[in-house]
Image 1 (tube, rainbow, N blue to C red):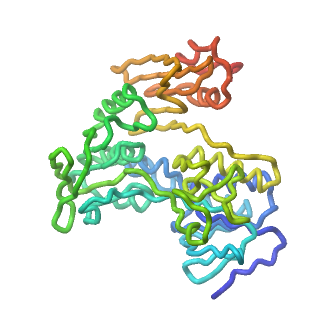
Image 2: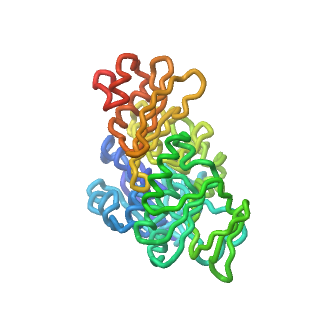
Image 3: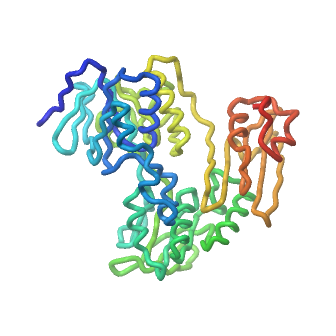
Length: 409
């Protein structure tokens, strides 16, 4: 076994995972404590980190893979960070503070940050292993889906963010797309019934058929996908099936090392795991029983961990869940308590014909949630107000019809 030796006096920090969370963490740390650590980033994909949020734009042919790269190789070199791409850590020896790689080499560490992300989930139904069944998670998935021809019929299973993005990207390529969602509305974790209905109509206008309350039970085909059966008895012809039914944290490496693992790698408010010197951030991490699976909480965790490793006082108390994206070509923002049940006051402005919906949820003169569809102006300021809990009693009209006033924020 070859051991990669390091003779420098700086503390050795290894980041396992080379995605969006890892990149933001390294950027924050090198800005706050330049030269303090000898940093090695190990990623199993054969390329530098890229923006997964923009994969649908790559699938649609609007961007190239190079366009979504987060940092070029010269940035990593200038930051003094070594990156090993196409390498997988297969074991953590916590007692020896050593990582074993899939090529037989090992790396010693003083501290290690796990940013192993997550993988796409698949429905445990018959036919899920047939040729023509895909997921939508990384560049390789996009490459496979890009080979679907215009004459082919694709069925996307899952009406959350990922499913909508996969359906939109395929529709933009001219593929005949149907999206099937088991729930009664799209994006049920981010939208109420009214907002979801407006989004559905906008998505259908872009060439995607939407089926709600559609529970896929079996994929049929002789060697490859031919059709999909649903619980209500209907059968949808398909040449390809794309699962977009959620993600599963990549926590196996931590579990094998004996770390405390639930759904993800359990961390405290300092992002520490149960093993000294081992931290976790991003989609692989479970904080106070929550695995977020979103970019912004991963960035917040990366910032807090960077501050702590730079010697600053910081703690992570959880994130206000928010979404601010172009979903299937439609601007969508959602944050906080968007349903506003109980004693909350709901302020709504909508124009279904224009595809515009704005909803604010107020409780005790504090903004606690919001949904914006079509027109997302002021979204960042609304999120700041939700997080800060500032009094908005004199600003409600401005909040509804435009960006919040600076003094309120």
